Amino acid sequence: MNIDFPFHFDGRGRTAPTTDDDHIRDMIEEFLFTNPGERVNRPDFGSGLLQLVFAPNSPELAAALQVTIQAGLQRWLGDLIEVQKLEVTSEDSTLRVELVYVVRRTQEQQIAQFTRAA
Image 1 (cartoon, rainbow, N blue to C red):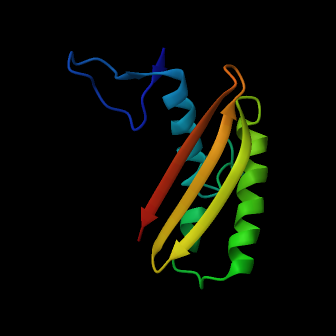
Image 2: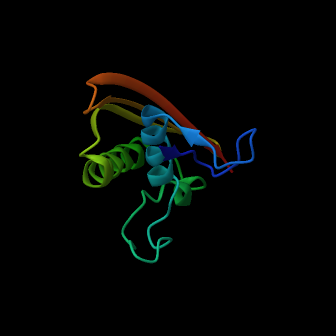
């Protein structure tokens, strides 16, 4: 059983469970929106994506961020997923991440979109 993220209780008052595929998506979201240094025992965990919400938007920044995120996903979740496509866009104060990945255990392709507005 996997615990759903963010942590909450189900209708019976117990810790809410989630499916394996949803748990993997939750772990991707945690990686994307965690800043390096936030985790005490894993100071290099996280993409630093939220630090760039107010950064000037440029194709070079988006390309660098995509490479950084893809490397981090490979490092932290490479045993669970294979990234097939990753696109990061920034419009005003909104960040969008579109990710296509394959779950290694089932070989099923998943598409996930993550958005954060400042």
